[in-house]
Amino acid sequence: MPSRNWPGWWSWAGWRSRVRPSLLADHLGRALGSSPPRRRLDLLLDLWTQVAAHRDAARRRERILATQARQSRVDDLSQRYTRHEDDLLLSDVRLDIGHEPSLAEAARWIPQTWHWHKYLDKALHDAIAATALLRAATAVADHGVHEGLARCEPELTAAASLMSDWTAGHAARRVPGLTGLPARPGCLVRDLLRGRSDDLIGQRLARARDYGIVVMEAVTKLLHAVPDSMSEWDGWGLREWRAAAGYTRPPDRWEQPPLFGGDPLAGRPADSETGRDLLWYADLADALARLHGHDAAVIDYTDTVPGVDYNARPARPEPFVPRLDSLPLAVAGAAQLVSLGAPPPQLCRDWTELVNGLVDSVGIAVATTGTFRVPAPLAAWDGLLVPDTKVRIDWARDPRTLADWASYMGNCIAGPHYVGDAAKGRCGLAALRDREGRIIANLEVRPVRGGWRVAELQARFNTDPEAALDKRVRHWAARIPPPAVPEPEPTVRAARAPSGRPPGRRPHDRALREAGEPLIRLVQDAMAAPEAVQAARTLEVLHGGLSAATALRRLGPASCARSPATP
Image (tube, rainbow, N blue to C red; front, side, top):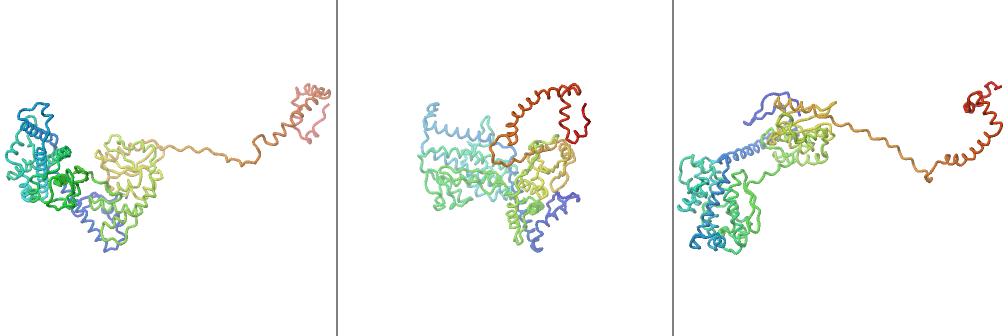
């Protein structure tokens, strides 16, 4: 990470970032230095456009979600919707049987085909009303209350026409113990068309997401419960809805098989659409997805009811691709790729081509680096909180992780110096994360005699972290046990080359053993001779034993010649 010499703030195009001009200049030089001077301006302007579009999309998502109530009422509304459904079902049972049914009579009752058509029509109308409500919320977020509702008036009118006054009154009546919200979304659509105050309109639109989720779940259950014996259902009111609202998904690309079987709508004329094609079901999912900031829902075609995901988890960003959250971050990410060994492409028409060239090159360089050797005393703290703080430790274990961190933090923690030392276990590189998992600082620790020290601790764009956090992190690092000193490996004596002889005693040992016994017998006979016995007695008297004879034997011939004669 570069030295911190420039205090202050840097601002460009109204986007304030805590990045020093010297640091930005360094990043620009590394990322664009090899490009022709006239091309650099084109690349920056293209990057500016991409960052502006990215930020506009983020602000739009925030505006749309701001139209919805902060507290979800999905559970309460689901109970209200289910109770309303049960009341309608019991009403059909009473009408068919002719009296208040017993439990057994209600259990034996089987809906007729026209009952199923009625239930499917009601599900279709609720889905259309919820779709219109969701689209109105999105339009109001984009264009304001009056213009937004004016743009959606044809759709709202078509959805409201599918609900009679009696049906709306029955769905809006209060039920003791349940939420006061109407049971069906069509009631809210009718309120929007009455043109009351902006506050009332805001209250109605604030529940668009809740109604959309409840209706989606209820419709899904009904579609799975419809018996296979049914073969016809057109969907009353669908043509009027299409005339007013049109399509969000092209009919000629809708490959979902119709309910009860048949050819998909993609192979038929668009005006042959019926309720069985379930394209209206996808419309509701798409409206929910747009409210959550997506372009469309994820649809999986099946043999019966398509699978939908209206709030799919964002895809993991491509490795090493610079972030477009701000211009300094994007430039820092590109400079980081150059630091990892990617040569900047010479001829790039726009920022996307520059990034693609860097990413393709850096992938090979990083793949040859391998993983990092995190020393055991540091690895023991992985995922834990720094004492007396609320930040969690996350040690880097490969260059890819460092590149992701550097792209977000706007620093050079993924540079060759850091990567090389981390791969050899000479340092530990970590991200300090808050409760939500956001990185608030990068940390480098290195071993010293008796422990560890903080080599660098920096927040985004190499700014200083909070003083209290800095103090506690350094205090914690100084108390981490030192890395274990590896024990020297035992010296292994080289094995002697085999001599070709069978294992056993050495040759001179075998010769000594063979001659030893005869020599012992000869010595014993010599010591038993009268002359030897007399000599031993004389030595014992003069010197106290045979030790003098042993000493005499050790003397060389020259020493014996110089010794005085014994009397």
